[in-house]
Image (cartoon, rainbow, N blue to C red; front, top):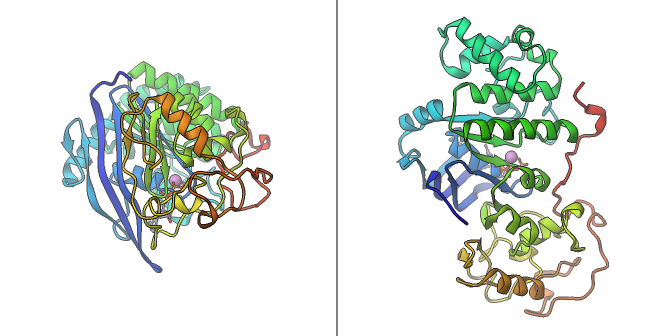
Length: 402
Ligand SMILES: Nc1ncnc2c1ncn2[C@@H]1O[C@H](COP(=O)(O)OP(=O)(O)OP(=O)(O)O)[C@@H](O)[C@H]1O
Ligand code: NI
């Protein structure tokens, strides 16, 4: 892996929430690095802490109930978590944020909190015109209208929005979902950012429109040589867009590697289960991961994944938190099966020998190094308990970009 200087470095992040059930220790010691010109994806199932990580980077974590207990965030070497003024400045000067379109994400799978946060993108209104939004986004209520129009038209045009002049005078509600998402990307680009952060911007769109949006986004990234952190639960999207991938599980980083390393042969048992649960992305024919994310108010001891792990070793994985072992290739994996300095080939051999998903067998019943042979149960049979990660978007073709 040839790497340039990091533009963004998140170190040792720990985020807790005060909830009715007690203190939820959600983000536990998360490190993320994005190099100049690089697109990094964070993948993981719903609830694993992707958005909390993004909110922290954007200085948008609601505090309370959230609390950043530990961690540093460096943007080009400047620390931001301890300096709100610097964070605000860097955000407005250098960062662009792409959210989900609040109007297409009004769906029961989103929490009220998430919807409210997204709606803020429109300053709480759905009936404001484009120029109004631009003024707010730029924080320049007095910005010269002609100048904003020119820049906006140019961007809308780059994003292949038909009749960009006309769109400027339309309300978001008059545009299709795909068009609104393009407008949201244009909004993020308006401040001429060098770093983009996107939290599942295409999730609510159907696959064809999602593809178009990803193409347009990639074009913008290449044109402006941007760095990007892209958050998604969709491995197909990560394959399209990412140079490197961080796999997150229960508020921790399970594995980091290049896109091909992670998607072609992941090493962490969780990543393997995740990738294998997407039929189109793999030749393996394994089952999904049984069980649910842990309760963050009482997370498992040792490795947070051990209760769901088919390769968990009693006396080790339930006791000791695995460090992130670094292979000779640079790939990092937080799992006791491995050790520092292994080659990819050695690690792949260990993974093939030790990790096999099947149904039902609980951690307690499992011998240490003899994976069970029963593979009768397939993903989906135990509805609701199998980690589900989409290769496709959940919406149907009926919702296409009209
Ligand atoms: N404002 C909040 N108050 C309390 N708990 C929160 C808050 N925001 C997030 N959490 C908790 O933090 C955990 C991680 O949530 P997060 O939204 O980061 O998950 P995610 O990986 O982005 O999931 P998804 O794919 O569904 O968007 C969840 O258990 C969630 O309930
Ligand atoms: Ni999220």
